[in-house]
Image (cartoon, rainbow, N blue to C red; front, side, top):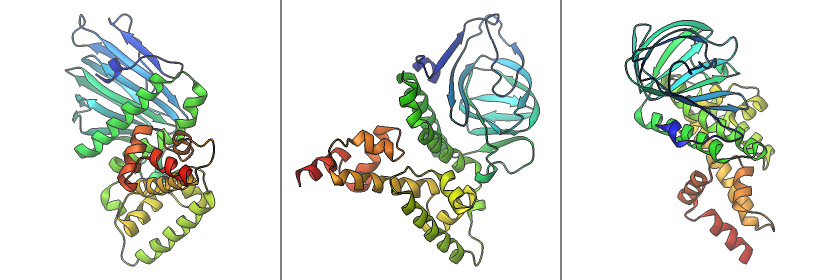
Length: 315
């Protein structure tokens, strides 16, 4: 179980309950009534991580009936399953389904087994990203196994990092890039593929838009590239940038920006500047998981980032 692998830190709070009398509900998506199906076998653990733009709770819950009004007065709430099965408002929900709530929604859910999942609450409603395009209510989004695996790995890396760090200031440096990676995983799940299709006669418009995007990226210099910052600089929605990138380059916006950030990091390493380290260059370009950065760098450039830096200093 994911939570069992984590330890508390100054960034990550861990709560564990071994009986129902001790149990306290979290109000991240609403407080309700929990009725255990096996009162003598109650066990619940959760890890609570506040990030810059929301709250994230990784939870392992006991078999129960849950009656609650979930949701948030502003922003958007989501549940990402790890190992999950329930009957919720008459719908059978399993481990392939991400749930999204806008506004407040009454829930009557029965889980016959132990469930593990992440609850997220973002302060933004994420409409600019094209998520869950409805006014209010509860929606269910099934995703491919590979997409769900990437999302779960990102979540676990995010919580493992928070568990290992004890310096809030150092973790804050990685706060924004962590969220950017998670947003990209959720984009893959919550933005319908047909929503990225190019309309007839739109290709030239998108090609010009991508040229403008590249100009803005150039103006950003060595600053990290985040989708929302770039969209704001162009006066567009992230959804429009997603569509344009997919239409012109055939890849996601996240993938395109990742390649740009890898090239920016390589250019810095090739300077061989005194005092520069691979870690500093990677973090400065918005890479928060250094192992993932190194693997991606080697895949693209055929060498480790440390080899690039060492060679530049020999020249």
